[in-house]
Amino acid sequence: MSAFNIDSSKVLLRDVVAPQHPLAAQALILPTGHQKRPGSRPLPSNIVLERDQALTLRDGIKIFADIYRPETDQNTKVPAIVMWSPYGKSSTGLIVLSTVLPFQAGILDSQLSGYESFEGLDPAEWVPRGYAIVNVDARGSNHSEGNMRWFGSAEGRDGHDAIEEIAKLDWCNGK
Image (cartoon, rainbow, N blue to C red):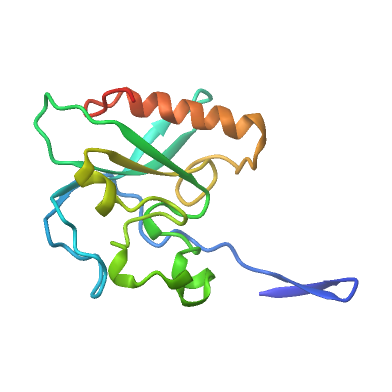
């Protein structure tokens, strides 16, 4: 890590940190009672986890999402709630609640499953209610291709494209 000064403030430059796990699209069932780590909230129902699912944007860039959804038959479609973040989907990035807020803002480990993204909804709470939670790594973050776009209409178009791609998935009811 190197540093330089702007006026009297020291600015630290950090090396780019690689994603914590390799890109590996897979689907698995997280069983009722599963805990991501000791002390975290046990899952109240089976949850289908589709990890590192590619979503293609209008310019051909692929971004990746972790999808948590109810275990249903092929005829049952569910709505999707999209969590959009450059901070790492499913607590896989550098910014997680435990590292940025003192005492985790009063939230106990036992209240969260550990599968939520930073500032995102916890799949353990919403999947049993019949929703899919889709945690998306925005363009340029972690394994998602391209360069980050902060704010503005370009990031809005990316969000639109991701929602349209999610709506086409066989488990999604388009909402």
